[in-house]
Every structure is written in C-alpha cells, then in structure tokens.
Length: 254
Image 1: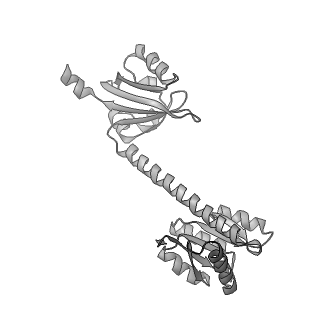
Image 2: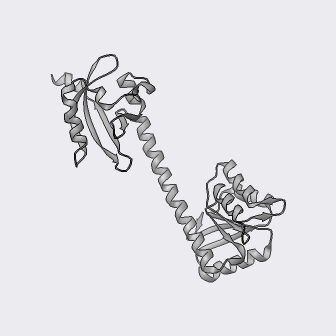
Image 3: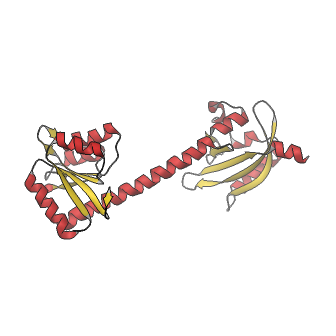
C-alpha cells in the first residue's frame, strides 16, 4: 500500500523499545519514504496481516510462544505473497537458513542493524519483490495466450522433439498429449521433401521461419498451415512454433 508515496511497513516484535529504535533509524535516513506500524504479539500480527495493507513486514524471530518462522508459514498458508525480512540473533545460522527456505526475502542480525543497512535491506526486498511480481504477471498473461489461442502453439527442443503443445494443437492435429510429446516436428509434415528446408531455416543464423507448408494430422487429413517459428531460448535451445491452420482459406483460393 502506498499513501502519498510512502511505503507501509508492519513490524512484528514483542519489544516496544526495538520498534522505537527501528522507527528512529528509518526516520533518520529516509523520513519521507516509510510509515512503520507495530504489532506486539503473534495474535495481533495475524489480524494485521489479514488486512493485506502493508508493503513489507519486519518480523522478529522470537515472539513469545511463537517464532518468525511461524509467521512466514502463515503467509504461505494464506497464499499471500509479500516481502518479509526476519530479525535474527547473532550466530543463528540455522535459523537464517530456515527463514530463507520458509520464504523470507532477507534476514538481519538484530544487534548489528544500523540505519543504512536497514534501509538498503528494505529497498532491495521491495525492488526484488516487485520485479518477481512483474515476471509472474507476464508469465500468467503468456500462459493464458498459450491456452486460449486458436492457433497451434508448439515448443520443441534442440532435437526438434515436441515438448509442449496447447489445446488447439491437440484439437487440430488429433493427437493425444502423450502421443504428441513423443513426436518430432518433422513428423507433422505431409511432404518429406520440404522437411530439410524447414529445419535448415530454423537452424540458420537468423533462426526464423515464416512459410506455408502442408501438415498431415493423425487421421491422415492434409492441412495447409502457415508456420511462424523461431528460437525462443538460446541457452535451453527451445523453439517456438506458432502455426495457423489456413486450410479453409487455401481451398477457397483454389
């Protein structure tokens, strides 16, 4: 939540003196950037987390009968993603490791905190979270396109084996998913003579194919298709093929 450009932070700590100290450090180094609020117990923290109005959480490891790890697990159980920085004790290496595994964005040794270290940790945690959130939104958008597209979308590896196919591919090509995933791109072509032409273009320096070909589906029906294929991931050697079924249009032209 941002109010007048300020980020809202919830500090979960049963020691009021530590809250005042952290607030003073933040106000000292960045007085106009952060609004710090306080939850003094695990129970109070759960109620505050439920409101989901804070941009970041500072959580002390020791919370009476509970721990900061319990708070992290609560975030996970809620399905609520937010950056959490855990305050730990000096030398608590196993706790630090457990915190990161439980989803903490960072951890700070409480006795070693100063204004610049705290502000930097908060800034980095917020930046990293926002970056990951943007990636997740992008992935969801592209996944939606993949699932809902009327065009055939195939992913193939460096050996041209099909490793992913959208519902339209299964519907048009008449294959079961496991059948298609044991097939290669070249197995879809109706004319074997053009396969090398396609693969040569795909494996060229440009690595892009935009051309009409004839496919044959599992039932033997010939399909006229327009293929747009390119190298999607050079490191993983994944090829993206977007294939439009133009059979009806070609018949009309003929």
